[in-house]
Length: 107
Image (cartoon, rainbow, N blue to C red; front, side, top):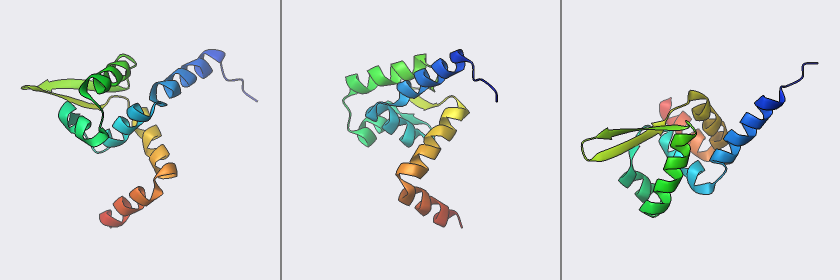
């Protein structure tokens, strides 16, 4: 049996804590569909601009999302493909009806 290094477990726990907030997880779910600007994220999540900005900043510092300025707008996207996969799996577990609709639409 292989022992998992303690540092890996701590890193995983830190990453999970980074997305464990309802607003941050909601943002990531929306970003599964592609980059979105701040105004779109405000509309999609119902969050205030200041609250959303704080959470986006935290996720950006953690390397979970990237941002890109396009003209006057700042667009966000999931930076780490592994976080994309993780959020997608969470969506399959907790929102299977949404994943089913996408799968059926693709066929």
